[in-house]
Length: 369
Image (cartoon, rainbow, N blue to C red):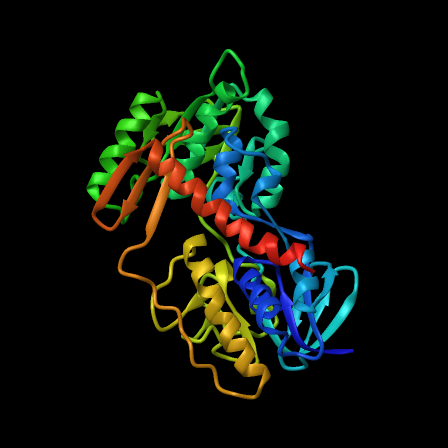
């Protein structure tokens, strides 16, 4: 069988594609979703789960239900290679799968070991599903935790891990160190946001180190300081899977699939890509869940036109400022929007409302299947 369209990976952008097809009809006669898991774990709700603000299941999107609602066959398998010329992918268990048009959103891969060095205590936040699966097992044995990475993800994880024990009713708190690296804390964020985050880190007794870290002979080093850690959580950004470049797709120097403003591969116009595995060539779009979510509807529209033999028209233009809501793990959150910042329990309620609304709109479509 040759699929008219094959969605490779169950990332945030493909969730939007499935939702579009569930609402407006599937433009393909034969469509399939190839993904190793029947659900997507929404990374934005992982810190809240760690801090005990909601259950693990609350942050799951039912990909199987969405696929059914969209009239898309679900293939629970992992893509390990692609030949864009002969138009097929190689899956781990199902062998060759042929397609006419393909869209790729497999997310990024972990790169903690390549950045820091290998260590049995090291846990990469990517892929997020594997991270969640191992964390609950690891935490009871971890009195001291080092979080490496000064971006929004690292900051939220440091706050969440600090507060986990309190929410679990235990009589101790994890000792947490945040190693932000030489780029510093939250690069690109306004000074007012940095001031709030620094003050909250100090209030919660989370040590902040702003030099690069590495692991040497079993010791986590940050500059000249050895950092004691029973668990090392790495939020050091996304790496690219090897198979797109190995198969002949145009990739950048870091291995990410190069795409134009319409999310089309710059080397093969019948291949689209979005999310952490792709990189726009016309403008800078950071690898972030915020951008992946907003790219989804654009990808859905362009795929619909491609399936109808039409040229794509829509593009995602990142806003001058994006809204970030950074949970502090203690019932509050810090708002960042350009140069504006705020903090309080009302920000945490706003974050919870936005997150739960995002999950709920897909749950409603899944349940209608």
